[in-house]
Image (tube, rainbow, N blue to C red):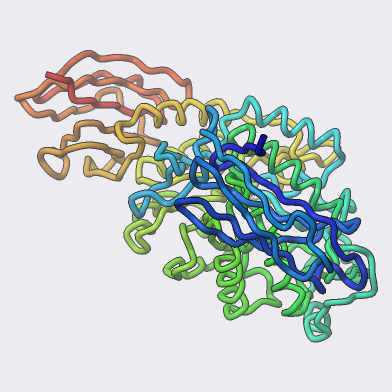
Length: 519
């Protein structure tokens, strides 16, 4: 009986091969997969102990054949084979892709509204905390999580990681010029002890145990229906990872795309805060984008996250805008402007975090975080959560995972449930009064403050009226509801038409949902 794997599942080919020299770099494995509807060649990778692997994600149901090639073995045993791709199980909707230019959807067409979270170093924490993080995620609203392959050195992150991404060595693969440049750009947060970098690694030999653990964690997230937004580089480093030479850095990108490109839930983020990595040039980032794009045969979502200035999202290989707020007060209010400028999906991956630490990006209230989410979605975008509450053991969700302490996750679950009821799955910014932001779907009559949609949500944010005008056409009935986005209640006001004044609770963070009734 042939092997079976679900459509959009993960099929793996494993072979014994050479282990002399540097098998990560010296030998090549390729596997060509073919069925009646597609032919895809994937690059394999060395996984230690003389084992080479290649991974594939079938896009169709039916019988696939495959042929193994390369120079990784003197004689390739069982150089060909086949497997059956069967129907996807419930919960397997395929990878997330761009839909209708500015939206996101699973490959099967199911709408995807990204309610993400940031947890940079959770997969490099003690194993018990990793398991605790997974348990927390199971009951959370989050359908995407951002985290790093590389360890993090920063405020609250001064301990050595569980494992390192490369084997110990003597600086093989480092660029001496970048090592010198690092000395003049060395980063230590005020109050942190400035440490000498640890360059005792061989940057041409990945630490297989490190990446095997990421195999497991990404697979577990996939089974939970959570997208893994994988950050490939970041500035908070003391292990020489930003001083790798061009050859070593480019090869690392090829290695991770070969190893993880076939996981349906993987996204690529070239960097967290790309502009804070002073050793890199814009030419470097362009080259990295081209490498990841061209070496991922499954064409996963790919972007670059900013610290200050945004990246040029008009690049062909950039699939969506990955944004951090650059103004403390104005954040997701710019969502529709970015959509209009780039014509691509807009994902706010950092909008400040709910918490109480002494850093401005990590001490906004849950109310303000949730408000920024509503602003993003009413304007047609997506948004990401983070949490940074002081902890006696310096265990903060934003980097370490563990448990959630904030008030926002329950409200974000409420928001996600409301979005699931939107006809067609997506909101677009509509017209309305000056003190509201309107997310709409379906047809429209009128314009300006008299615009009326088949479906609309009128979000009032910081306003707290005791009454509200509702202007509707005279020739149709509309169901009107008050949504309390913080207390998570929905109150029906019944059917209306024409001019109405409705009573409101006089609280902030309210919205009106208006739906045209069926004849």
